[in-house]
Length: 73
Ligand SMILES: N[C@@H](CCC(=O)N[C@@H](CS)C(=O)NCC(=O)O)C(=O)O
Image (cartoon, rainbow, N blue to C red):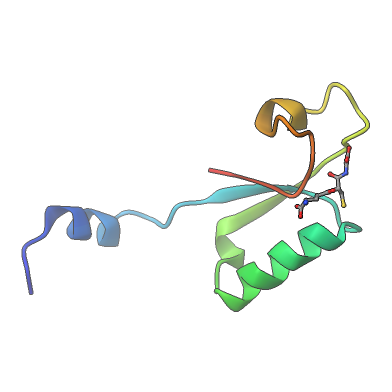
């Protein structure tokens, strides 16, 4: 096996986690959740509900379009 430090680092560290700004009723969010499930990524994604109508919701800082789904690292 090649002695590749970047590969070793990736194997030893925990998998990257993501936040999905979302809503349970959004069909666009549903598509992302299905893709995540098929790809085995569900455990790495934390769903955080979004209220696009609430000006104090951080969504507009996270996605300049102010739309969800919005996947964050
Ligand atoms: N083309 C976008 C559409 C996303 C979209 O329109 N999401 C809706 C929720 S289902 C939304 O963000 N609505 C809030 C708004 O437009 O202010 C995509 O496929 O993700």
